[in-house]
Amino acid sequence: MSSVFSKIVAGEIPCYKIYEDDVCLAFLDINPEAKGHTLVIPKIEVDKIYDLDDETYNHLFMVAKKLMKNMEEKLGARTIMKVIGVDVPHAHIHLIPYNPDYKDGEFVTLTNEEFESIRETLAI
Image (cartoon, rainbow, N blue to C red; front, side, top):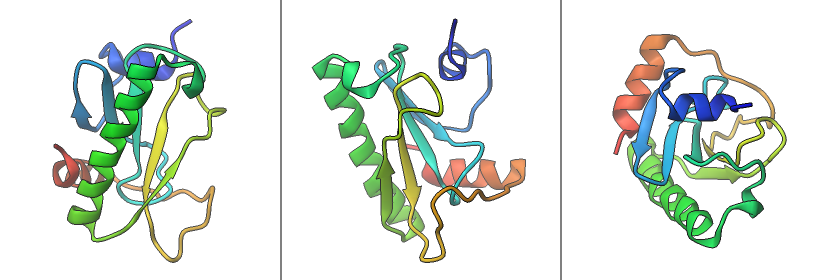
């Protein structure tokens, strides 16, 4: 059974895309813990991040690094990186702009217009 992320990669479910290449895709989390909360996923469906082949694993983290630097430049905030591995059975990295009021597990409600504005700001 395809994960929700595989359906996003296949174009079956829309997303607010930040970055894409042949190996991975980055898009805004629709249940963000902060404005700009981004998910970086491999295009291949692998449940656990440590089960990725080394090349894909390294590529995913290099893209995350690039996106974190971009987020800091565009949003003026440091970025938290989290690899949780239990919420969706598809390897992924969370990139969350740091806010001093941030509390792990709390979510921000955004309108479609706010998501699109953030997407435009962060798109590479």
